[in-house]
Length: 206
Image 1 (cartoon, helix red, strand yellow):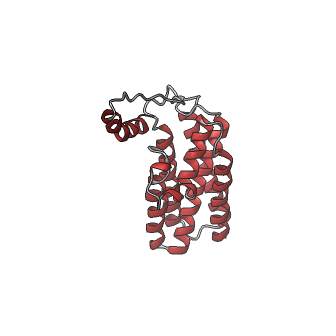
Image 2: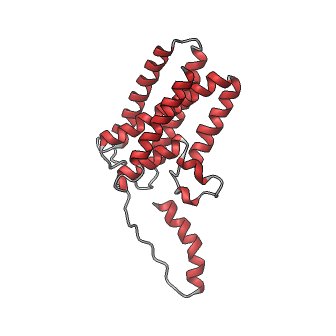
Image 3: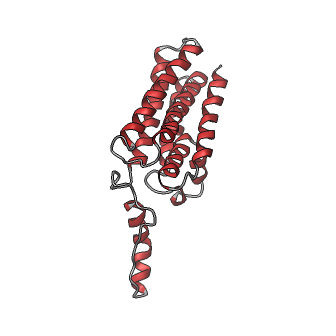
């Protein structure tokens, strides 16, 4: 998309000028017509990460002693509604910004919301007020900074790069990109690892 193109032009433009060469860019894979700035995957992921964080935070603060089965029911309902809503609005039934299969995209968006929500619940349960700070730092700030929605993870500093393969935001965004544009690259691993975030977080809470 434009962000990557302009970054590469800035890096390589001076070298091309010094060598009296002409720099030309070509999109090997073009973005969907419904995503002119190539930012829809980032905003879809950021919205779900933020919503999952807020759900975990507010639901635990309001009902700290809620029985686990009811907490699971509310988390599942939230994740299903928010994830399916994003897939329908951003996908082919809506704006067409995510051109992949709606059902497979919905599987990612639902799991992404559930992974962030369950991880936030875990940190709140274990850490209390400190857990709020940790969830904000790890899931929101580091998660979205390393997710690869605006620029690929390969553009990150070396010490941040591994986080894109671990945190829910990076896993979800790569799965969405793979399903939409790159023949499913990163989709299966994203689904499995997001599911692991949910299972481990809720298992520890239990």
